[in-house]
Length: 135
Image 1 (tube, rainbow, N blue to C red):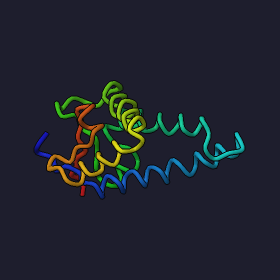
Image 2: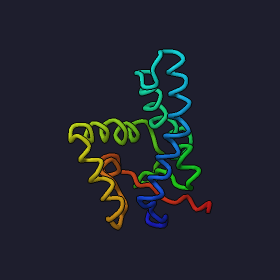
Image 3: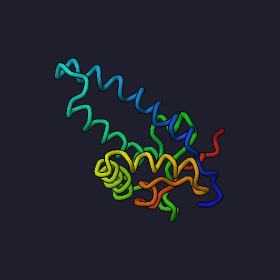
């Protein structure tokens, strides 16, 4: 795994923003049409399923990660599976919620300052985000 260059804070942030725009705006429009409000349980569930399932289907990529040429990899080299992504998204998200966002801020600093560029959810799931070499 160490033969890949780790993705840093700005690249990961850019991918997250792109995912938010590419998925969030259409979901807000659809949710507004269907339910009369942009933020609904429907849009939250679809967003969660997108971040959970797309990296499994698309070999560690989301649309934003693909555009930014970064991908999620397991440290042991095995393919990303549902268990890995549940740990990353669900358990990681619960930790961020329980700490009222402080965990997310700590994770951002970890990605920006640590040599291994891993966030809390990466440690929980045994993952790392790397440059995919397509640049």
